[in-house]
Length: 263
Image (cartoon, rainbow, N blue to C red; front, side):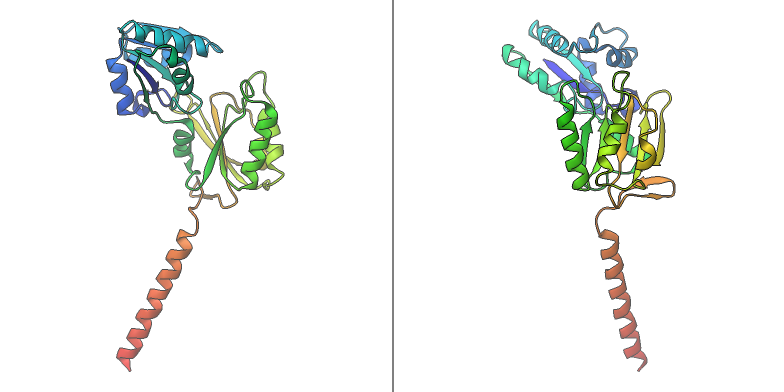
């Protein structure tokens, strides 16, 4: 059995019960170095197999081979295994291991964990876009940014910068400016669930000048997003207006009934 496990931000409190159960059942834990380091202290007696950056296929195949040997293997990914994780690649490679049963175990992706830190920025329609061009051409990323901005989606941006892509967030902001104003409410969540966790609210006009890294998730609000008691909030459609109209109608009806009784 191979469990492909989303460990959320990496701290025990934000792991799902299904995640913890899969890791308990596992005979060996495999994954990217940093993610294995996050869970290893919770299971100090379990052997681990770790690989570095750009070794995704290698570690997926290694995990499948362990499972083919009869072991219960857990391949860990940050956030959710199916959101920029290893779930898809494992399932593609698993065709060469027909005897191996694969179970995808969902986790808490950074968009959800970061949104909770900021308030409720994703309470309406939203999309998730990665600014990493390692596997996706930048031209396609630009197209997706423009389309999302034109459709007035709230946007969660993953992988906003790295040492080689220090200005990608700034470039993304310039694209979003084509459809969004500089006063658009934005948020930043850093080191979610880890040491140094921090959230801050800013605007699109200021966002491009803020230093971010691969452990930062960026949130860009839609045209209705606002700050409520220090929290980033995207109202869910016209619910409040409908409630107010209904309430006003009920009040008018009650007033009319009272007048009739008095007369």
